[in-house]
Image (cartoon, rainbow, N blue to C red; front, side, top):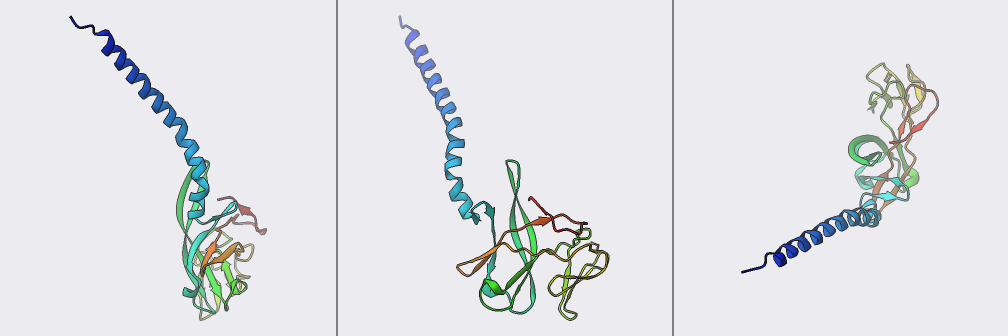
Length: 179
Ligand code: FES
């Protein structure tokens, strides 16, 4: 007559081992993710603490005029990261990063996207008629301040990398808000 005890004990050992393995993995996954985070951030263009987005080759931007470019921006909300498209206005006056100007397209009045009118050499907001000159300086209309420049950018291997920044709208002072 066979004894069922050894096989039951074997099954319990197997079950205990599996549970320990699962618990070990549950602890190990966050540690591995933490250790790999610097590599992932580097792949996403994060330089230091700030996240930069690739705006493409600088050579693709025509010299002497404002050009609209779409950025992939990573937004952090607590632990949650989401990717959003964000347009920027970029102007290049020559070679090198001193010749690059970048402007947020968000009208500081109520947040409509401004358009560049090359014939008039001005930005105009379609919502309430705010007008800005070719350097983004407010000329007329209800916007309480000039357009917001995006001054954090780098040129790496011929690509323009830009750090997107939101600013408070409807106020005269330029107040950065976290993204
Ligand atoms: S939102 Fe641009 S003028 Fe009002």
